[in-house]
Image (cartoon, rainbow, N blue to C red; front, side, top):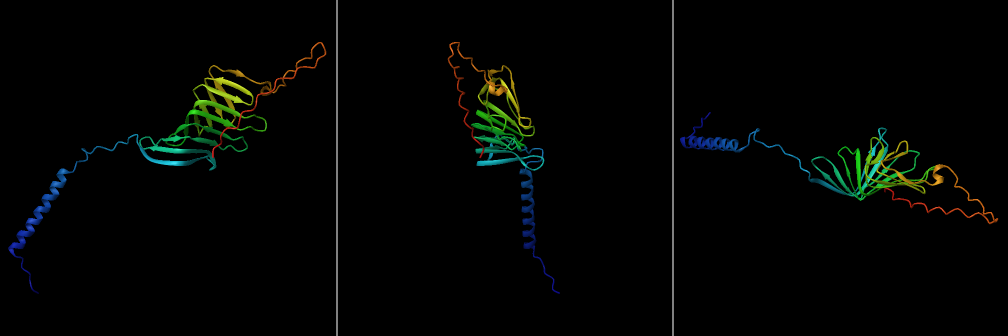
Length: 228
């Protein structure tokens, strides 16, 4: 078998190339920052994605839809994973109970989708049931606690229930028990029909004239918007 002989020129070329490779590797290692010098990436409160005409469903422990959130536009932020919404609408799904919806001009949704905040011309509407008239609450802020099934506000609120109207400095509405609690300075007008009593009948005049008719009831409130 023939033995190949390496010429001195080839040895010099191999030595030069090896030196260049070693020098290049050394320069790269010198220019790379060490682990101690590397600054960790800090998330900022900037949008990382958008969506239009979004629909988010929140499920109950049994797997059924408990709440559904619609919005014309949403913006998600990377630092706290919150979502800003334009024209949000929240609908509660409660079996065998009148529908409850909440709308506003803008809103926010927290990272784990357990809290929905509704701001600016916020309205909560409970549709009429077999024994209850429509209930409508107006405020500048309502907060929906999904896990507790509660809607509340710490701002002044106007509450319409049928033909009655009440005012308060805050409100707590339990969607399970359907109980409404007004807070702070509460005042308003409750119609006799809302108390389960018949309105009093005016007695006839002594001259024998017929009794004056009772004043007509104000028109019922119009039905509020429903979540699509």
